[in-house]
Amino acid sequence: MLKYINTPLQEILDEALVKQKLKLFMKREDRNHSLVSGNKWWKLKYNLEEAQKLGYETLLTFGGAFSNHIYATAAAAKELGLKSIGVIRGEEVLPLNETLAFAKDCGMKLQYVSREEYRGKSDDEFINKLKNQFGNFYLIPEGGTNKLAVKGSAAFAKEKLAEIDFDYLCVPVGTGGTLAGIVCGLEGIKKAIGFSVLKNGEFLNEEVQKLIKDFSGIKYDNWCIETNYHFG
Image (tube, rainbow, N blue to C red; front, side, top):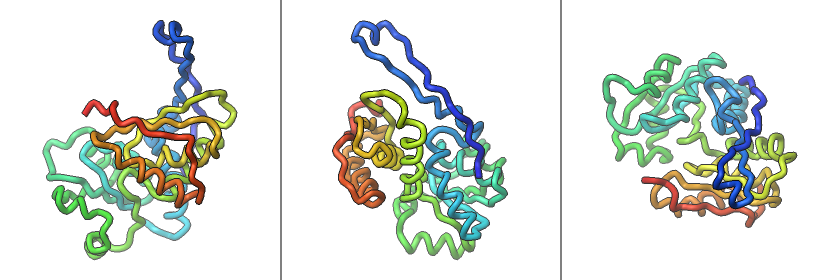
């Protein structure tokens, strides 16, 4: 199991906040592990446990050339003595950027596929092709988001947020797993606001709603996603 480092709650001080009589705090989950940090620790937690429990020796996952998920998965696999494969969207560009160079140094095999092929990353045909090429592996979806990732994010909310007094919790949204898990972990109490990192991210509302329902079976209404702050 990956080591977890307890993280502080840091107050952000700014005159604009004082004028509006607002208090803003940041939960410094970027400090929870030296390499597998932030929400990635929580999203990978139960996936790694499941892979080890089922006896898998190899992890395979997906991401772009600058994916922090690829970075974290490569680091986690190395720490736990597992092999890893990263299916990378787009062609290889040399020299490798820092993200992919780090993943390769961790022992991750980088498999580049065209953007067209990458769109089929969830299709059985594409997955079977990868199995024929690489053999047996434990599959972790792009961004690490699946039911076990939601479980990990829910555990974060229950274990690390439950005793904090706040009105709103804000979190970025890429694939939706972290927000879905936090909403489930809050169990309808307090408000969670997600900020889409993607342009035209309205589709994320449906994705998060499905993740919440699949995990908890409950339809919560204490959350929303803002889609106008992606800077894209």
